Length: 332
Ligand SMILES: Nc1ncnc2c1ncn2[C@@H]1O[C@H](COP(=O)(O)OP(=O)(O)OP(=O)(O)O)[C@@H](O)[C@H]1O
Image (cartoon, rainbow, N blue to C red):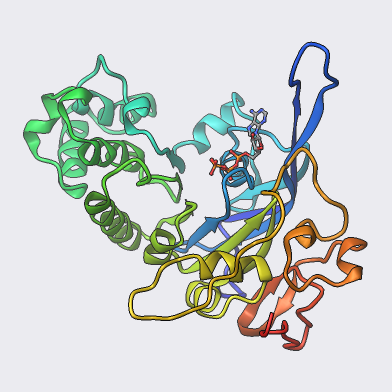
């Protein structure tokens, strides 16, 4: 991201907690789904959001587009605070921000044809005349690699990959500036995943959209992201250019995640994380990762590290990574 261009999306110190009641006779507990998260996204940039299940990726996605409200912190889109959902200004903004979810079948209406569903956002926002809308729907269909005869089909008549292409066409109908994709290919066959990722990358570049790409799969995120943010228990622990984060991760958690990805022809020792998987309802004090960290120091249990500048323009939240390139003990 260039320093001078204002970000299309900016989030500062986002916090989202949920009250969770686990039984009639239990006190409700607080789930800290997002805990002090800040990020910037430039126009035309793709940021991959990765981390284990439950670390707050989807909650972050919903906060960033206004589908959920933070308990604290702010989200600005195009330099202006994101209005509350239901507000007339939010409805207008929805033209410029779209979200694509994991399950295309759930996202599509089983009673409407694919053509009617792609045309829907154009009708809601009254874009173009009837014939212009028809032309636009056909162009969108071609953009996502579907045929004209798909227009008259119903969602159940399409394969999983074709349905996700139809969802994408609908999301692109209003020419959004930002698209948030939450595990968009996780439900698809591996062979289809690569096709849909290539399509997304191509569309994103041609339309110069900004994109947040949420996934637990680093191999998929790598194919599409300019930058990667690694989340642990509701916060970003490392963020930087994709290649830097994936080839030389600095945070001990990123190192463990990256080491778990099998790489053909490359021998790399795998870091096995100790301790229990993270529980957002029982967040440890100090650095949230310290109970599982192979290089934790006594201070890590007492003080939470801030996300600070690190080598290669990265930001890392670890006491062992210094401001001026101090590095983690690689022997660990
Ligand atoms: N509406 C909700 N009510 C209560 N708890 C919630 C709600 N939404 C999310 N959570 C909790 O917040 C935490 C973060 O959830 P979130 O879905 O954002 O994580 P995630 O990283 O996207 O996980 P996954 O990859 O499994 O989807 C989890 O513990 C989840 O159970």
